[in-house]
Image 1 (tube, rainbow, N blue to C red):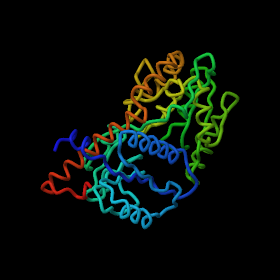
Image 2: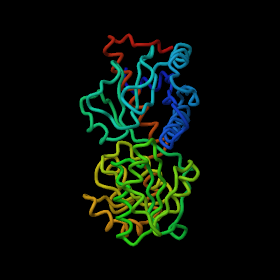
Image 3: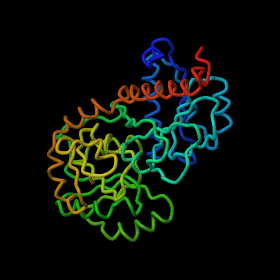
Length: 337
């Protein structure tokens, strides 16, 4: 049976599992929940059954999720996790795991589960893991209002964690060299990041910098829409790149180093500027801020909508299940009725 025939004859019964919460919802967790909501809505519109395990369930929700899987008897479980080692040890159904964070190349994945990357950069960071597909994360366009250039300000926005590898100090210096104000919307998680802020970031603050805490989802959209550009100065390759897509959805160009996921999501010279080295970031800010916000929004509309993501996952589900059927001699791992 071909992949197309599988789709026509047998709509899939799917269980989508969000990562468990270990504390208050972070921007990363909210982003994964947005991805899951978009994915579920579009899978249902394609004719599939897609149940979503309770996203409010605190960790470790292993027992309740396994009971739900036994009750629903899905053809496939699609778990979303921050690492390649998800919280639930095993499901009674073929399982895919989308990894939403950095991957340690020497950490084994769950046996039998297929891994889905959210960028090619993520796959390259751990090439020995059992990756079966790459599907970029989507954003819900209605949650990221578009702002034309005449409603933007000229400052540089920096979002993210205040960790040593995030390059916050580099961002401040680059914006200052470009003659721009910097708005920092940062999260300091734990004493190590606070210590880094006090040692490396605080001494650089001045009249041309505004330092905010971690924004809510609504504040994040407002900040991204108002900014002249988003600067991603991370020294380590970013595996996800969702912030760049959110910015472009708001019509805000992106300045980033030419590595990691931003190199896959940003069109150099159209929706942002990619720099080869940190020393080039300052010179990239002015040209990026002059790019057409409409081109940024249209790029996201073409490539990073929920429908595009769901189509990518649908192809992945069918291919993975076909492979499981072939390995089982055509019997399948679960009943298709």
